[in-house]
Image (cartoon, rainbow, N blue to C red; front, top):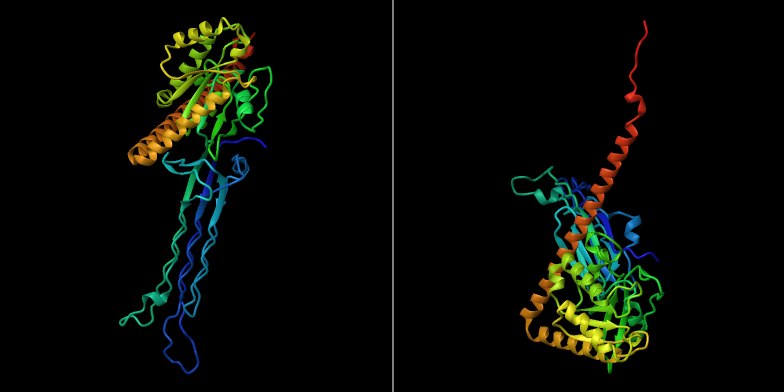
Length: 400
């Protein structure tokens, strides 16, 4: 199945039913009076987070969704039937944005969590509602209200505790295969990973955490090069980022220079994300000579002036992976306990995640606008070339 993490849709809530104009007509009852009933309320449009979905591809093919309208009221003070709500199932981790205002309407991060995105129209009133001591035979009703109509943008961001960063072939997918049951594609060429992959790492007891792998970044990713820039938004929900560095680059470059590329691209994409907790993971150390490991690893640390935690490992040989996973589990447990004990800390963490998502959304939109303008300019230049015909340069002389 194709992985689609963005979709734009239009939702229409149902219209409320009109009120009924009716009078009671029965034999031997000369003064029946008004008996028109109210209409029914229109159905609303509701999004619900469902299990088993991991893509928004269905919303790429069907863009318009409309809830049922309410029925009109009838005589004998009968109320019209209300319209059925339209419930659209989306993957867990979907962010809902009003496409016209840019406001975030909600985040569906839990199973069966719901979000009403379009309110159904209110029902109209029948003439029974308007009777009074001075108006015994009202001929007044009210129509049902129109339901809300909204243009929505759906963004899917995977739910993970840990995110992996690195150049293509840095060993991110191999690491996930080594520590979890996930089996992402692994090969000896760049851009093997084309979509985000998730792996659940089980620890002792019932403890576990989720790792997210995204396509590798390359130099210029913040300007739209490669695949990774549009998938960086999937790391905005994570608590911790692991920066994997290939200690034996296949292209002859140095590990320190490659690590610096990732740090620079991350800073350009989202300064808030770059300021978050991040660990440096020096991978493929098993390919180095034993007497070179210490010096080569220190070169990378010095090149980056790295101040955070540093780990050495080999995903392929499962060397150092257990210690790294244990440290990650301790970090996540500590963060969860601190947030549970201090609600303000949890609010700060949520505000930070929202800020990262806003920065990511803005950056991706800027790149999309830049590509659109570039296509328009290229098309205009192509038309100018087509119009530059040699006939315009020919001087015509009329002989008498």
